[in-house]
Amino acid sequence: MNIWQFMLHNHTEVLELTLEHLWLVGASTFFAVLIGIPLGILITRWPVLNKPVLGTANIIQTIPSLALFGFLLPAPWIGARADRLAILALTLYALLPLIRNTYTGIKGVDRAVIEAGRGMGMTDRQLLWQVELPLALSVIIAGVRVGVVISIGLATIAAAIGAGGLGEYIFRGLAMVNDQVILAGAIPAAALAILADVSLGWLEKRLTPH
Amino acid sequence: MPDSAIQFRSVSYRLENGRELLHDLNLEVRRSETLVLLGRSGSGKTTTLKLINHLLAPSTGEVRVEGRSTREWDVIRLRRMIGYVIQDVGLFPHFTVARNIGLVPQIENWPPDRIQQRVEELLEHVGLDHSLGERYPRELSGGQRQRVGVARALAADPPLLLMDEPFGALDPITRAELQREFLALQGRLHKTVVFVTHDLREALLLGTRIALMEDGRLISVNTPQEFVDSTEPMVAAYVAAFGTPEIRKRANP
Ligand SMILES: Nc1ncnc2c1ncn2[C@@H]1O[C@H](COP(=O)(O)OP(=O)(O)OP(=O)(O)O)[C@@H](O)[C@H]1O
Ligand SMILES: [Mg+2]
Image (spheres, each protein chain N blue to C red):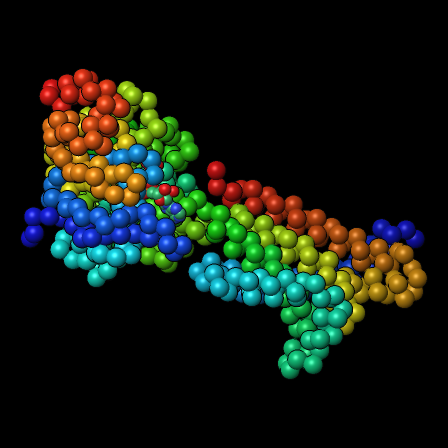
């Protein structure tokens, strides 16, 4: 049996694990966007928070993923289910690119444009929603793209704590010393990463202001 | 209503590092006049404008607009009654020309059909074809962009207008055309205008009075005629730099 036959034979399981994988990545990206973009906006308004916020997000990124899963294990409610734990950890990892890109995207908006808006009497909120965010959108999407691609890779490790996803095959294959089983997890994961990268890259390009 | 629309009272502006950009400025802008701020690059013209709409706050002294200090104004209300044409044009690149022009009416919650009507009117005012409304700023020439910048500032019919080198970086022919249009427009609208330029010819043509600035200080305020006749050394030097005989001719057409 070659790898393709193996995957075809086990297509229900492959599909199930892929969907689990997507759930981990999708949910964590959702939370990362929900937290990261407001934090990125916040540090453009309160520059004193810039260093602590970006510093913390940076440090989180340097924690090895298995260790982070371990650290979070004792957390109440979260620690009770492996997928919650995995989603929290993936959210934390995806925060840095989101915060950073939101911040640099907004800071990168032409000063003359901001000044014009301010001078015409736009409120801070109007300036944010009508000018800064639309003009920073492509840079923010680039942050989402980096976050998603990182998450797809890291989510394979979530299988180690029993959160499911395509990592199941990888760990099972490692235990069985069976390359085919490893590849059955690795190939779909890689395909997802490429797909996400290409489609978000396309979106990013489309939204780039000229 | 007081006769002066804007007053600077002993205004200084310093950066946080202590560098003084404006020194003890006392200046009055009368209602319905076009006061030109003339001066070399870096003399503090833009800084002076930004103190009027409170993009900058004076370090000492006060700026009064319509009799009230800019510190006491609700800053949003203050800015909405002051049209502002910024030096770098600063059109919103993601908005069409029409939406750029209609921005202040939009944030003032005008009904859409009234905004549209106003935009059409303004395009005409500044000599742009209606079809340009659908375009984006990047699809315009530099001169067209500057016209849009002027139209945008006029949109909500503000009584005050701050224009920071609105016709800079244009070829002489287009520039002359826009200057003529400005005069025609001002003849009808009678706004209080503070107009920044470093071009003496433009100052003489458009200004009812000319305030000469140098190195963060106000040197003098003169009518165009007084300006060309002045014996004040810095004024005379400015006139000389533009060629005295030709300039005199302009002041006495
Ligand atoms: N935010 C700032 N930080 C530091 N220096 C500044 C700042 N803004 C203005 N300056 C300095 O203040 C001086 C006056 O600047 P301003 O923009 O008012 O000049 P200007 O007369 O408008 O010149 P130009 O004709 O070139 O536009 C300049 O020396 C400028 O470098
Ligand atoms: Mg300037």
